[in-house]
Length: 254
Image (cartoon, rainbow, N blue to C red; front, side):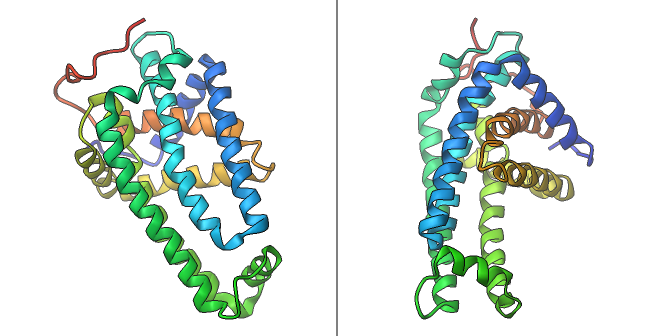
């Protein structure tokens, strides 16, 4: 575990921006994928707001795996190899077992998150699930402050679990071809070893995504790939290895 300062996340963002500019086609492709996810989330909020947290957790599940292609592009560029869209789309195939196990862990968290969200709605709205307008009214109504606090607390807890489990685990699997459990534990250790910096990094991620969503999600076309590339550098900046990568995960070929 490497000691981190508050300036490190800003350096990761700068390096991520350079990676995106160096491979604009790859960044655009994944950016459009992220925007499609946002469009689905917005559609669900309009029609079935009680499932927003469930869909949001699903996006948090799918997002890191889309970002794996961006990690591959950054990894190749770091190794002095030209990034390629085809390689980024298939980079997971050599790590299918580890990725499959990590998927199972995240699916469990997703299901628990969705169930907890529905329970909160059921407790505070025993007359039935509110409409979209009802949700907005409930959030901005001072009389419903208890609902807002509980809803945010539950969502924040599960968001922190997902964040801690995935912040460096997926790039670690790509880089070292390690098993999912070791990668998840390492990811959690990174957060606990540098709690202030990693909370700051999580805040920056949340802030940039929130700003991107203000433009009907179109901002994710830029912000999504940017954060994906930056997350690779976050992994490289938080974990140092005393031995070279395993033979199962050789340096990328031209």
